[in-house]
Image (cartoon, rainbow, N blue to C red; front, side):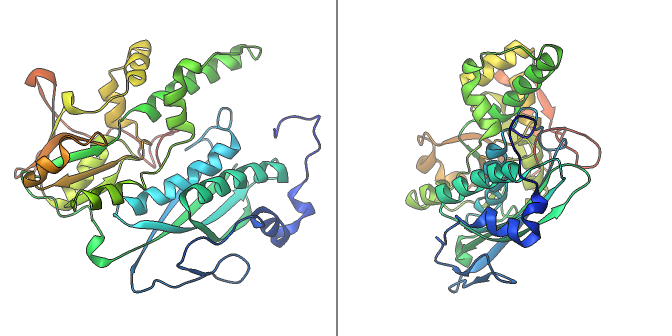
Length: 354
């Protein structure tokens, strides 16, 4: 849209700083019972209602975390919300509010911002959360989006990264690797397009993994699922930076090690076939890729019967007293040390994870 020279595009300067915020947020409604005052004043006002307040912030930068060559702006708006609220969910809390700030250059017209905020609005409506503030500023380095997420929880509900004990089960929700291999497909097709702009690829066979990359979903359902099962995790984290990285975070904060079993990791068939197509071991993508936004948590081994038959969860390993994190390959043939080889914020340029 922003490159079509035949369509009139409204310059942001036509609205001005305050006018553009009013324009972009005019359709956002108040949904959360914790929101007293949202957008429209110097600050928002919230009423915690005797609950603990949780805050988290994420930043997404063009050509570092996303590529506009294949990322629709509406999907980008949706995804930035997911990136924010997933951290709140990983604390076993309910996300209720977000603040969005955008740095944007003059190559983006108002219509482009409309697309981004349309995606934000769809996500807010779907997850029943409020946009309560933010800012728009000029950027000389492309598009930058920052999201601050606000959640609320009773003190006894909150789950931290610390708390795992030796012999605790290591559990993951959903399946893993889809976002990483969806990215591989998009990167490949982007290279092909640059060579031949008339190329029109059929990507229907990759629909699941492309959605996992471009329009991920946050696991807001997990909190209630665990509550209904009378389960309280001993530690928890969301999978945004790759499974290996998240296991190492739990290990560091809980002062335990983990044994991860390759054959227990849940993988969708589309991930397996795409990995074969690229000549990549799917486990490599799962360990290092990220952006699945599933939840990784630990439970006492005494809770095994409560969770082992639930289709939403997979037991993929256990905690150990020795602080040693390893992957045990299929058939127990090899024991491989786990290392975080995924996204390094100041060393790599990679369109995955935060």
